[in-house]
Length: 451
Ligand SMILES: Cc1cc2nc3c(=O)[nH]c(=O)nc-3n(C[C@H](O)[C@H](O)[C@H](O)COP(=O)(O)OP(=O)(O)OC[C@H]3O[C@@H](n4cnc5c(N)ncnc54)[C@H](O)[C@@H]3O)c2cc1C
Image 1 (tube, protein in one colour):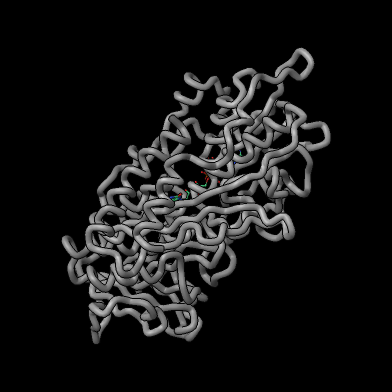
Image 2 (image 1 turned 120 degrees about the vertical axis):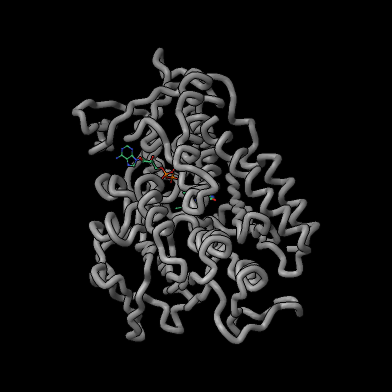
């Protein structure tokens, strides 16, 4: 994407063009009773959906059922690892959704849903009924694919830090205690997983920190994949900042001033085809063994396991394979009527699993549910995603896209000519601005979903 295209694209996103506002029309009465939309999961997708439903029609009842009374966001959690933020900075209160928008809350865990009687059962035994249900429960992990790895190991020795909270703090403690010349191994998961650039942003920000605090330290990224989101802009940044050897396969289109190094710098990335896949771990010896049989010691091992829809989605019979199939026009489950699935748990085809995607899916589902409750046809949906990552605190890269429904296949596809990744010939100032945009994005985004 050229710099001019990128500016136009960002303007488009700033205009909030997800759907026309025509749907946010006058109130609906279901006989004498207002319709009741229940949202399971008060994370990014669920909170945004609840807020936009109430913005669209104040008279409907909207209830969020959420396990925790404070949301701990994952976005920004890599900065907790480097000490640039605290875990408290990640906490988001639900006060605004309740007090400003009139969303009701039940802090409890859903254990079962009967889609025939439209009844929800909670852990405390309480029951609740709905007219339409939105499910945005996030992800869960597959623990069993790697020898020697388990949930217990993740909670004690090899944290994933892929859900914010105790996992973030455990990994931070390990990084702080790592010897000055230690090796940190990061094992990114196979696709699809939440926040595709996240493991690489983590490597970047830790490299920036190690440069100052542990200049002899190494970050070894052992990847099952041969590429990742924004890989070339990331690698160019790593080359400039952390003496990264760019592999031959990623050199296409790189600017002439790329540095050529004859030894790995602070970050080394091993793709799957070079044996990056980790097949076993040994928590006692603190080693990982790769597909090619190399056993490597790490002082810190950040193993991020493969991912799938949240447990509740399986319990509710919303899944096929690992994720929840939906009708993309209305985001309604193809398995159970009146239940809409959004966010990381749903199959959204070309859209990445990100907070931003969950946020625009939430706006689409809110609009479509209001249409359905008003006995109106659903509107033509569009979705968007934009993601800024920091290669350092002053060097950012981004990816963005606008998505539409392909009516022939029923799939969500990229709109031709939209979005793209940061150009490789970007100026220094451009990358600097992208790092600044990341901060602004975070603030605006949190406010849009929860504020
Ligand atoms: C390190 C990292 C960095 C990231 N950075 C970015 C970024 O920069 N930009 C971006 O767009 N995205 C980012 N993401 C991804 C983003 O956090 C997720 O994609 C987003 O949170 C998905 O929203 P969701 O609503 O699907 O799930 P979540 O936000 O995880 O919310 C799910 C909620 O459901 C609740 N829940 C689950 N089951 C039940 C139940 N049975 N009963 C009641 N409640 C339940 C959970 O408690 C949780 O609050 C990042 C992720 C990570 C790990």
